Image 1: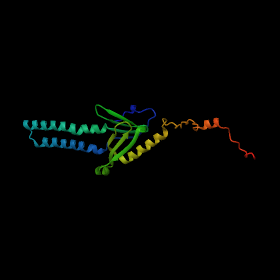
Image 2: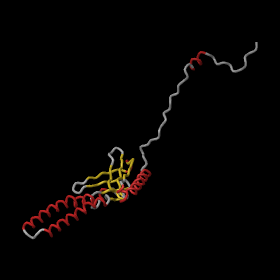
Image 3: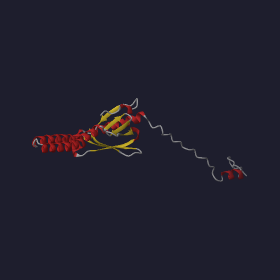
Length: 203
């Protein structure tokens, strides 16, 4: 399922468009293969009688339900999950029938963490957690080449900061302190005459 381009702005460029790692499709594919093999085996082993036909239909209906719920539906969920990295934000979209989309602007991301189990390291995938200011953290599960994606996300954030400097920072203005006169200075100047600076007169 393609990602809708109408959600992007005119000057927005897609840098990475990812789906979860293909390991998410292994179990659904195995379920489909097993259900098909089960139906074929039942069809061959049961006798061509009315009872055998009823058994084949019953096993076939159960296999069809199991294949749709545990095989086809997870594959659709996998293909409809999008991790899109642009030069302005991260777009997360999932859902087959009812879709949910979340936007994370790059200028609001303050942290990103990767987690990898032993199996994830062997397969080259992992979980990327993105922490955004004022919002709950976004968890991107089974990201392929998660280390490369995290490095690319760091580069996008730094580039966005260079292109869009924070205009809210204002120069600090140091307030001028009012001038205070020394206590008693006015009294001395009014009560006494200035002392002569020359030598004292001779008697």
